[in-house]
Length: 118
Length: 116
Image 1 (cartoon, each protein chain N blue to C red):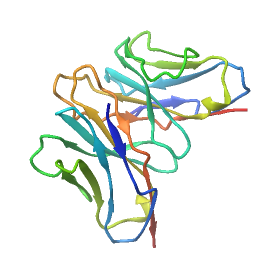
Image 2 (image 1 turned 30 degrees about the horizontal axis):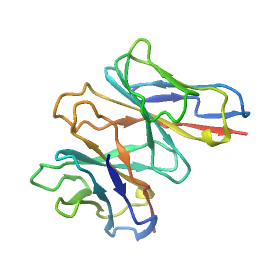
Image 3 (image 1 turned 120 degrees about the horizontal axis):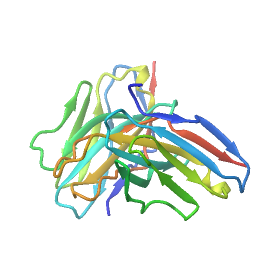
Image 4 (image 1 turned 90 degrees about the horizontal axis):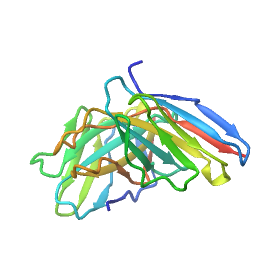
């Protein structure tokens, strides 16, 4: 497809269950980002990949959160033993290959996965 | 670390009028980029406009323009000739021009409602 694709669109899970969220970036985009967006707030950075390398995971809130991008394209964000505070929209974004000094490349976002933990 | 402040939680604007959305930022980085995104109720974040910290001119993109005042650390978005489809949440974001830091830092957003 032309844009970033995320699935599922909605996910409801019981507290304690594990969930997996998928992101299919724009073809050819080297950079991939995950963000968490609480209701009525701006997105908060979770983690960043350049191809298959996870270069920054400073935003992951706990060791229950894990992300991977094994072949440098599709990425999965996994949350283990979910808690109610994990309820949020999880946004994936991709951008072209980063170049030193080139910061004007916008990140292109998917529609997000709305996660609700009961 | 960067901090983005959007002080207007919600705004109403009449169709065909202009609206200005405020954004101030705080950073110690000498070089940075500022972005505005639109988020309709469908949830997708749509890139609108970019301003680099060393750009001499204010950015414009169709009906969107940026009022960039570097000394005041503000980057206000102006939407001219508002349309009903402009009703959405608008986010200001920035990133530093460091080679190892690509993430965006977002403000809390401003909800714009366009009235017919």
